[in-house]
Image (cartoon, rainbow, N blue to C red; front, side, top):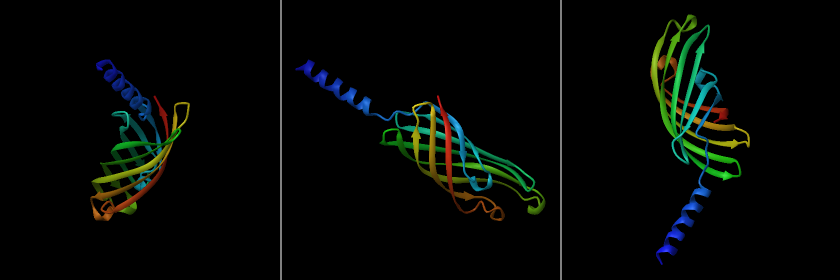
Length: 162
């Protein structure tokens, strides 16, 4: 009876592991969206388990009108769809800095924000992943810079997985 019980537990464990979500341990690439004026972001993802990961995105701008950076951190939950397709949801936040020039009369600000994330991704058989996500952000900062509002960012991501 004990052998049958151990075999049953082993079979259930094997079945669970073989159906578990497989995500890469690390991925790095670009998240191409407007990022509230900061443009494309360098994006890094790190697996925290079989179906959870941490995503860090860094956007910066060095232009004629203003300089700045924006750092975002998100905790994401992964769910399989079909084949190599997954969908995910996440929550997190971040901080940024803004240094205005010329037309913005030298306005400077440091701000922080809360963010959500929902998206879909496709993992190719080669170490390449494409994603499309929607990230609402609620900012807290100087009213003159429009950081004290709700922003919606849609972006295309392309990442190398390793």
